Length: 152
Ligand code: ASP
Image: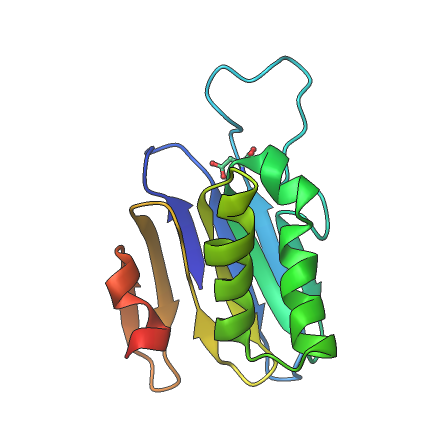
């Protein structure tokens, strides 16, 4: 699955994948924030902030206000909610993206895929472009929160 911040045509691109050997992987590329300070390092390259993958748990890639995603250890927290509180991927991602990070002042979204291939993409930002490939080979693309796979 891949996602892209909806507010820019040159923004963040993320990908999460589960392979045939049950390995999970995540990657995130960002141009950063508009008017960022020279030398700023956002959340995208920081494991556990904008990007995280652990076999058997989750692969997650985030977009949004990077400083808050770092403070909130966004993608690691999704994994910890799944491991220690036994939340499903959709509930864990929703908890972090919709409940925790906005309280810290951070809007954005995440694409998240668990070890069984369950995918969700919650976002507190108005729109987030993302797409995924279904088991039967269909390509699905979405943008608005009401279209979240968890709401299907
Ligand atoms: N999270 C990125 C950053 O703070 C920006 C983005 O996703 O658009 O660098």
